[in-house]
Amino acid sequence: MPQINRSDNLFSFTPNLITSPGWEVITNEEWNQLLQDGWACNEYIPPYRVSKDTIVSRVSEAGKTAELMAAISSLTPEQQFFWTNFAWFWSNNATLIGMCAQLGLDPSIILAPDPFLT
Image (cartoon, rainbow, N blue to C red; front, side):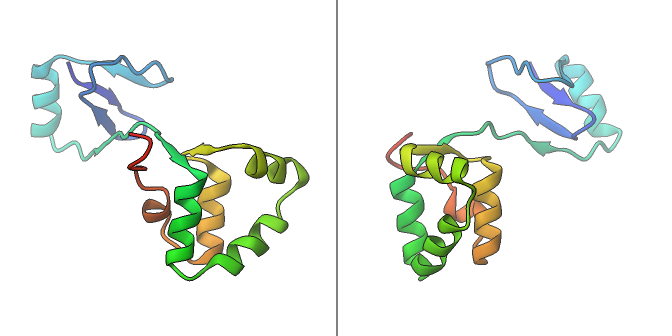
């Protein structure tokens, strides 16, 4: 059954129930009617894990290792602790998305699905 979030204009056909606020299960007929009525929506992609090794490798391939080191050193002590002690991060981690923007890198590339954690 389709699941939709009207306020965020998202849909999902995942068999797992999305329990976040704003999500509802609808019938196939309701789904088809929404599309016929012109509802513009995007597919919801659940967050996934990306290893720190993969993140660093991708940043290094982009030639931004020194910039990453500077960005890490500018993090708060709590964020530095997490960076140092975590082996992987969620793909929707706001700090890492911000760091990608700071480094001029596309977070959808740096935080793309990790072939080692799928």
